[in-house]
Structures are given as C-alpha cells and as structure tokens.
Image 1 (cartoon, rainbow, N blue to C red):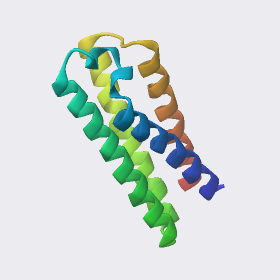
Image 2: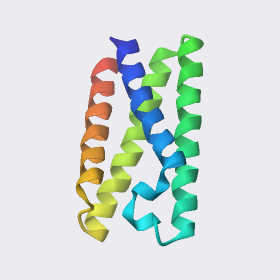
Image 3: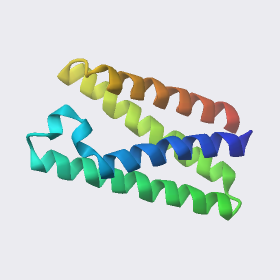
Image 4: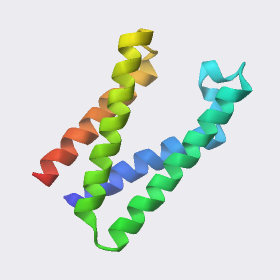
Length: 114
C-alpha cells in the first residue's frame, strides 16, 4: 500500500511539474506577465526536483521518510492555498480541485504513517 501511494503521488506531481514547465500559459493569469510565466516554470522545476528526491528516497528504502515528506509538502501547499482563499478570495475551479487533491493526499499519507 505504501508504494502504491507513493507512486500515485509521484505521478500526479510529475504531471503537474511537466505542465508547469511545458505549458505555463494554461494559466490565464500567466499570458500577460512574463514574470508569472517565469515563476510557473520555476515551480515546474521544483516539482520535478521533488519527484526525483522522493524516487531516490524510495530507492534507498526510506519509504516512511518519503511519505512523511509528502505529507509535509502537501500541508505546506494546503496552508498556502487556504491563506490565499482567506486573503485573495476563491480561485477558479482548477485550484479548488488541486486543494481537494492535496488534502486527500495529506490525509491518506497520515493514515499510512499511523
């Protein structure tokens, strides 16, 4: 179960990273601002690096550490999105779906660890 969880999360994160790197203009706000395009591509690189880091943890048989890191990462993303919702209003549906997926990933990881 642990490995299935990790591979599903890595697949989702790799897809995010790929689209952030390759198609940053899929985000409506990015089309008009080169700085936002740059930030979105940087996030794609960050996602890619994180996926590689988690794969290395799995290869080194550090599965629990990988799951803990996933939970911490998702908690950080969730808290950032919640602060944004409180201060900036509700984002579009894609961002709400991302928040829901991140919550599911974090809670699932906690259940696996406990």
